[in-house]
Image 1 (cartoon, rainbow, N blue to C red):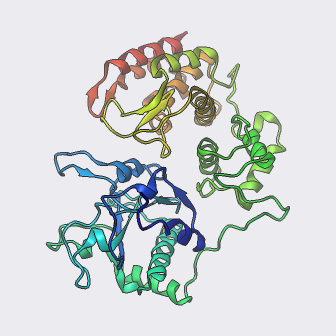
Image 2 (tube, rainbow, N blue to C red):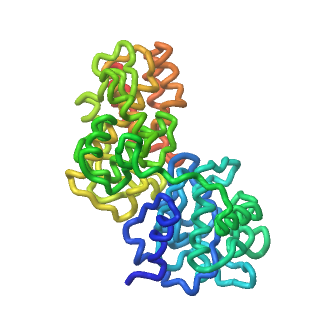
Image 3 (tube, rainbow, N blue to C red):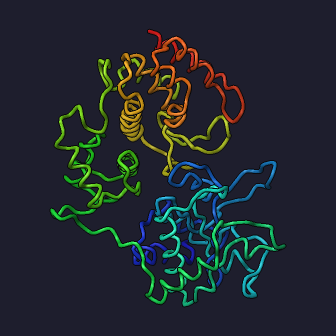
Length: 426
């Protein structure tokens, strides 16, 4: 049975926001809500990187820890990503408020829509695009329910006893003032992305299909199926980050312009500049075989072996906001995502290497490492610094240091790093 808040995506889209509906959101909730009186603002206190790394937690709840009890999901009706995307999590009641009161209303979970904005809460700067989306999201809800900006509160304002919560790390008086200006039509808001560019190319986002999607896929070198699904969206986000664009996964005029500039370059200059000394600048079969051997292929999402939870993984080691507990893929979907992910990782490793002399097998070993540990781990590693300095044996020895998951030595990582070092030396 669908719960009451099924109007959320229509209201968000009418406000010009980017909306992503999480599977099953219409029937997700701790029962239904009551009469909605306002909006409660939160921050996730999640991971410092990623567009919406806390999405799985918002959907499924959190496990018990030393500092907090377990809490069943959903933990909010809306997740607000760092790029301003509004993720619709649930249409029913969410566990987001706890004990408290705002303007005499103490039924937080039943009477307030909870918005969890992605932010660590520990000194992280709020981006302009995310703040703008936060203001507009709250204003859109308040306008729909016929309430003023005074019915937007921070969790830290609602929670009792006072001081029990500190989220969000925003001046809520300033926040309400911005929301009020939007409600009265006096605010200066970020302009919506135009529907097409000056040449008539449509702005494309998840759900689009056709030859223009194939053109994008060809330029960023992922499988060309003409479907703007989650794999293409993820690849577009990576492309946008690499080219200093807002990584919202939407191909509007600015992204189109950058894509088409690259499309007319010689092939060796697209996306990356191949380092000198690389004989074949794509992961070779030995690299593919190594990754597949250690990842194996699972058709249903499984928890991270180190954390016992996030990030949920499926297929040949694929992770992302579209992968949650219970996600299931076909073998073809797993293979397609692997090909897309591997091309992305290969390009990013190549960009990190710059002009460093690198053999095919060294490149393959480094790509396998990045695929498993993450591109940021490679970027900041002594392994990469030693490799770029030409200290190849020293770099090979660094693989063996990366064998920990959630503070524990994992036998599978010991075996994988040994094989990556062997490939690197070959």
